Amino acid sequence: MNIETANRLLKYRKDSGLSQEELAEKIGVSRQAVSKWERSEASPDTDNLIRLAELYDISLDELLTGKKPEAAQEEKTESESDESEEKESPDDSKTEFEPDENTTYYKYDRVSFKNGIHVDGKDGDRVHISFKDGVNVYEKHGDEVHVGWNGVNVKENGKQRVYTNENGNVMVDEELKNAHHSNPTHKALNLFPFWAIALAAFLAWGFSGLYFGWALSWICFLSIPLYYSLVDAIFKRNPSHFAYPVLVTAAYVIFGYFNICGGWSAGWIVFLTIPFYYIICSFIKKLNTD
Image 1 (cartoon, helix red, strand yellow):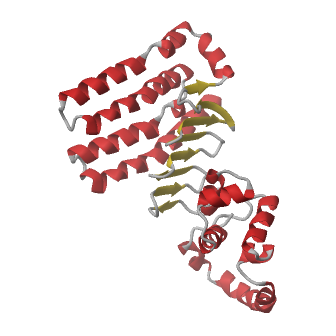
Image 2: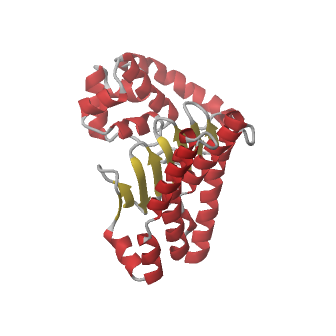
Image 3: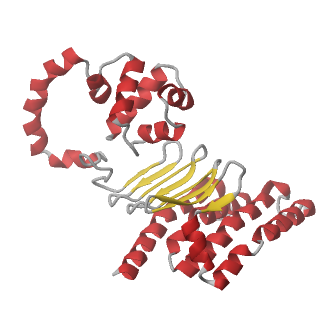
């Protein structure tokens, strides 16, 4: 879906006075799906497009193009006459980040700071960071990492590998569990109760009152996914399994509290290292498969 259509979906929803949750409930999808449509990360299927058009009481053509049926016919000849002019000035198109037709790839690398930090690589890698949706990494081969209010979710080649269930427990699929069991050292390190160390550090730091006390000691809990993902990355020899976005989040918080590298106002730039990390991971993965 192109940026114009995504912005149009956002406008129609706001004009209707609906939140993302309310719209999702009305058409029977998740709020995350609506959010992805409006950020041009995914496209609604035909059934959902029809439901949206019916909900907003507009035609499907108007939903997709923004033109009313009668206006679309009048402007058809104008668009055809302008087509030759557009072809004669290709440099003008470089000022916009339009996705290629029928693909989520972009013509150029794109960075946006609207409602967070959004990095879209022209090769298909994407990183989206916001307070509302957390850290979301999409690797062009299908791997995904999501760290947010709903927990931690890791997908590998389209398959959900690690996720947080409704009780807050981190779950691992059977295939990965079996792989872990094949290496006794790997299994032992994964069974090691590192969470207890993180909890003890959190309590000790908080009660001590040192270095902002309880206000900052919660960062100890970020070490839990860092530990287990590091173990997995080492034994699988796949650095993309390491929860690098969590490490970056911890670094940003430390920069902010201790006024390092410009504090809160400039420390956010550390998030821009995330796409470079996964680019390096993709390169290493390609070397291992060749």
